[in-house]
Length: 198
Ligand SMILES: N[C@@H](CCC(=O)N[C@@H](CS)C(=O)NCC(=O)O)C(=O)O
Image 1 (tube, rainbow, N blue to C red):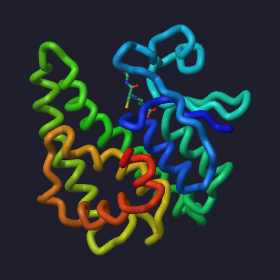
Image 2 (tube, protein in one colour; image 1 turned 45 degrees about the horizontal axis):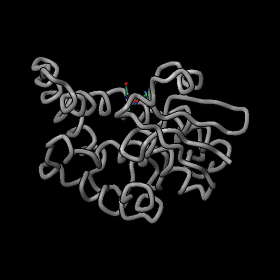
Image 3 (cartoon, rainbow, N blue to C red; image 1 turned 120 degrees about the vertical axis):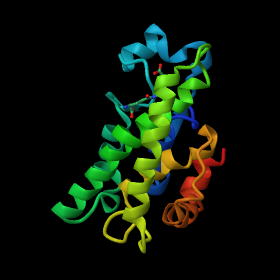
Image 4 (spheres, protein in one colour; image 1 turned 45 degrees about the vertical axis):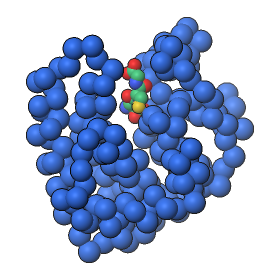
């Protein structure tokens, strides 16, 4: 059975959400990040970055959440990966954008919670960047139900898995009506509820 290492409150959540959507059985392996479980020799042997998530599928080991999600889509849920070259390219565009820009800025604010001394420059930069990223996402979602090709895809899971944490970092989505109109039904999907509500 597939194993996903990492807590549901981390980037591992989007991999598990996708597995739930795909109807693939998996085991979530607890990694106690508070006590450095992601920095142990045993874990570093799987993922030398000391970050979560990591997927183990039999003898196959894979890290980086987007690589993991692409693997799951290709192997188990091709319907979530787009049906034309253009759809797949746009899905790739939004998944990469989500982790490179959106996740990066969100994670800066997350990390401040754990720092003894806040990094004021990084915090200020994130507060400048996040409205820009959310503005781009909001514009892309105007009059649309989903990000790509008017169907639910990997792109929606990836972007939503990050945006849904806005309240945790004190960011209001009230100025982004197209985002909230998209996010609310997506987070109500049974697969999302199973992972994110826990
Ligand atoms: N690009 C990586 C980012 C992974 C990442 O930053 N994971 C965080 C949790 S959401 C982590 O493990 N942080 C612990 C650390 O950096 O020490 C991915 O998408 O898999």
